[in-house]
Every structure is written in C-alpha cells, then in structure tokens.
Image 1 (cartoon, rainbow over the protein chains, first blue to last red):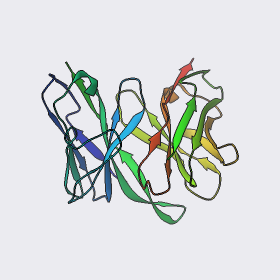
Image 2 (tube, rainbow over the protein chains, first blue to last red; image 1 turned 135 degrees about the vertical axis):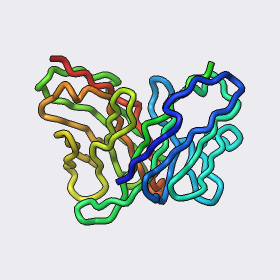
Image 3 (spheres, each protein chain N blue to C red; image 1 turned 30 degrees about the vertical axis):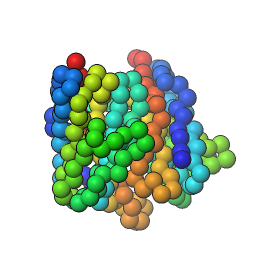
Image 4 (cartoon, one colour; image 1 turned 90 degrees about the horizontal axis):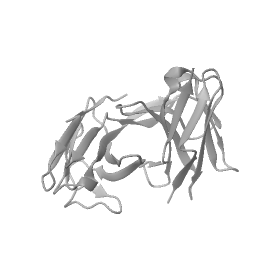
Length: 120
Length: 114
C-alpha cells in the first residue's frame, strides 16, 4: 500500500498569485497523477507527473498554468499559476502502487487527502 | 475514450435498507472499473475494483459490485445500509492505454436515515 500526504491541506489565495502543492508518498511508486475536483463536480485528471521528464497534460490543461515537477519516485509538486476564482477546487495527488490481487501482481491507485484551494 | 455515468446524484435510504448505486460506462476496450468512497473532508478510498475474472466483486465495508458487460454496468450494492455509509461515491473507469488514468463519474451522495 501507499500513504500519500499533501501540503498544504487548504489555502486561501488572492487572484493573480501562485500556489505550489506538495505531494509525498511513503514508498517509491511508478506513476503519480494530479486531479482537480471543482465544487460540486467530479474529479478530472490534470496530468501525469513523470519522474525526470516533463509532465503529460490532459486536454484542457497546460504547463504554463499547472507546472508540475517530479524530482524522484516519492515526491511531486503542482503549481497553480496566476490564479483566478475559477481555480477554486480541491487538488488531489494520486499514485500507483504495486499490489497483489488473488495472487496476481497488479497495482492499486491511492489518493492523497487533497488540497482545498479558495481563490478570492 | 471512455466515460462514466452515475444515475442519481443523490440517493437516500433508511438504515438497514438495501443500497444500490448505479454506474454505467462506455469504453472501446475491456475496462478496469472502480468504486471509490469519499467521506467529508477526506481523500478517496478504494471500495472495490474489477479487472478480470469473476464479475461479482466484493469490497470493503460489505459492498459489492457486479460487472455486466452486456449492460455496460457496474452497479454498487450493499444489503443493509449503516449510518457510517453516508458519503459520496464515485465510479471510475480505466481503459486501454490509459494506464492508471481514471475517468470518474459525477458522484452519488448517499444519505442514510435512522
């Protein structure tokens, strides 16, 4: 299993500023992801955080707005740049960790507790 | 591409009653299917998943789900609701080359009445 922590747990920021969210996993994982959960909506994948290379962004998300770093196999950051009220969301980090399912080696996806961001 | 539809954004049941949360998916390849639960102010917790093999999957807290390919469904059930089951439930699908990338449904908020 994997235990994921995020910092900060919540923040209130002014428009035009940037916030960096940290995600720490307690074990080495192959893949890490960042999701956004806007108020009253479901989770949407922002990007895959690749270790040692540029993140892979989903449609509608760009590196200039959401730069991501992943310097090693246990840590990643997501920056929300030049924030506007529309960026008010919960941002969640997730990671794939190996698991055994009925004797077969597979993986399981674990989620962090989320960072609740409010932009005023 | 894949998508997930959860029928009913809110479901209300009495304690001890059957819980049924509906999920339909679309996927161009054999999917992996998941149910997650989110308690207030907490992260997502995996309830159960279907990858291959037996279509009836048992999860934690007495929940189970059945993968029905012909109906493209993966409904979540629990025979007897408990007050502690009150939470938001998300169905998700992962398919094809989207290794680890989940597409989530819009979520269903379950309320349990005494």
